[in-house]
Image 1 (cartoon, chains in turn brown, yellow):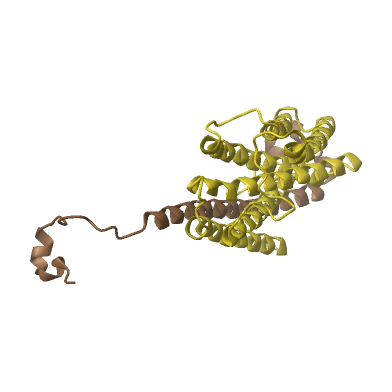
Image 2 (cartoon, helix red, strand yellow):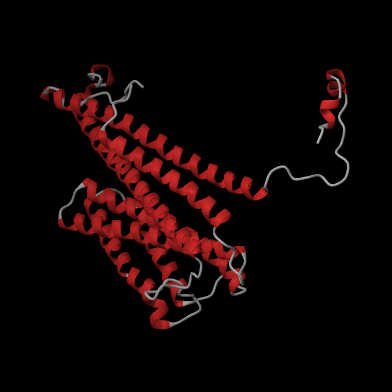
Length: 92
Length: 239
């Protein structure tokens, strides 16, 4: 079966748009498309869960650093918060 | 560069398996499993509805175990496990309470009826909603956590009542899965349901695991911030 579009020259194809005559055949199954869409939504949802897990991993690493800084803080720094923020040692 | 731990690899493997089974399950249900003769395509809700109820039991069981362990020996991890279980129970319970009425509208001609199983299911979901509301608004002290743990144990007591309500009190809710082989007449129908159970088990485990870990980190972070303020450390960290 010849494709009407391929019978035309490149200049014809660039300047004219022709409607399909008669019953238009369905090229894709609506059922498959619907199922694919739902699958995609669920996969995106699971990717979001994976990204959240990754962010928690980052947070945990920063938390480990903070806990190490607290562990290494000298006893005299206790109560330094009352002296103002400029005197606070900074966590890594 | 984030350091990858064995726990991360395990979780990502579980999540990849969940995604693969989930996609296959959706394709199998809608493109392979046969359409039921009397109810038509609406019957396919069944393959999500029943496994969701089962996943709710998984979440509720996690909440029960975590709550019991917390009452025996208080720790952040057991408390977080109980809370994550309650969250999963509410999520999957909501799926059950959404898909069930959609099926009921076709099968019974009404979205809701005060059938024993429907009522006990709603009651159970409301108990876990109450648990989460309590945890969200009552603070993080030991007293509130212990009270919530007692509620988590009480919530689990309702699960056998949901399960056996149909046998004990009758009602309209059908019993398709029985010990004598069940009412699914086609092998593909049975396979679709089995895949549903597998999918929702993996999904429930993934979500409970992820939420437990997040809640533990949140709790640690809160404690570390309090310690840092007490030590006079500046808790603002560079990103």
